Length: 81
Image 1: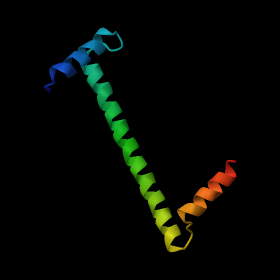
Image 2: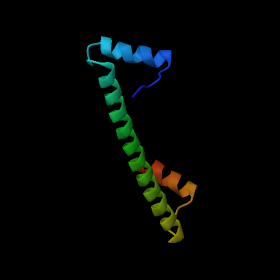
Image 3: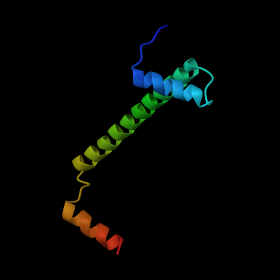
Image 4: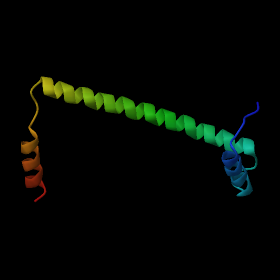
């Protein structure tokens, strides 16, 4: 497989190998891809959690479990005085 890189990315790749942390450009690319896939999974998980929290909030609104902003602010100020 051949991959075209910008000169900046190629320099970064070469610098990683030159640092001694990696033995080859292929090793750097494999590590970068592993990290990319981990980041993608983290984003999916975060989006799922956010959607669940939104659903909880909407359910609270529908059930009447809400407070206006002024009440929330007063309660926060009382709590942290």
